Image 1 (cartoon, rainbow, N blue to C red):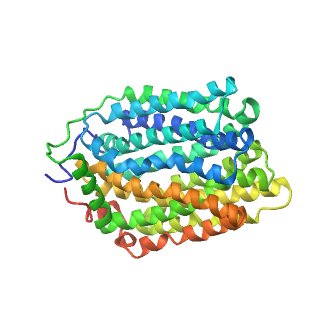
Image 2: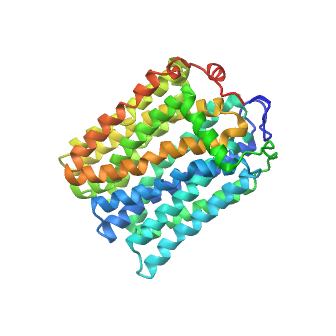
Image 3: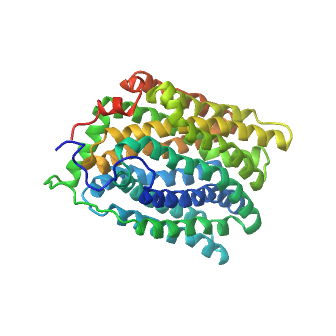
Length: 427
């Protein structure tokens, strides 16, 4: 059985035009992305404004969001043995909605604590892991291989668009309703997503018969990502980027709020304006890829994504100047992350055999996202010892080195999806 014939689902032939199932899936993703952007701003603001969190506590909060990804290998192998990936996506949405609803309830009872924030971060992260492992297997049920790059670009446009609207909406809601109440929007977004995904009709065939244990599948996923030269290079690149960008992300809201003395509305405005870069990057990624080639476009993105973070340390002067600089930094980073993500995600989808998508995604995510809590904790420690501005410089310059993984690998020679097919992992 080859990867081409190991279709577990019924992806339609051709492109995305007229593909109603993908459009519904795309809408569900868009709705949850907007809600998530609100929570990404509101959750740390609860810690900073209501609970007077320290840099160390902020780093722990950010680390807990990504800690569940360390179990991604096991979850991914388990998902590979499940037939109904759609059901798993719905369960993950409903669970995260319930967890997030606990915050506004606790706020109304004047009972919000740092421990609760930690639990919310941990449990929503666990829901994201389950959804992430089922996502790609469900994605390939809706999209033919020839449309992977286009479909990935559209999903990334939604993520980027949410980064434009989410922080601005989140900042306004936080100022008008307080941060815990603003999180209601994210909870509702998961309920809407569960409804939309639950209505997608798709045939999901059972996985191929296998006597392998879950542990054996975990080992298989690890061997896949560590031994295959393309997967190994992509993992090294994204893992390095994630480590250094999380150093900065764990401290950015704290830096903007305390060092730059910006209000929640101003922070949301700066991040929202800057996210226009991600929106443009997601839309342009397929076109740039046709000019430069898939691999070279990803290399450019791997440098452009983290490097501008170092410039954030230069913010000074009047409020408008600080907001403008933060916005400019996130514009450049947004373009970079989409040039990298859209191309690498499409590449990973193309070279992974269908029966192994869960365990490949699990092993990859466990290592890729597993470094994020470490980066957040290191960022908190450096922020305490060196200060916030020097830590941002270290994060920006260190992250730019991630491109070397791709430069020294076969990825830089991959120009098209047809080239990617030639390095496909054997089924």
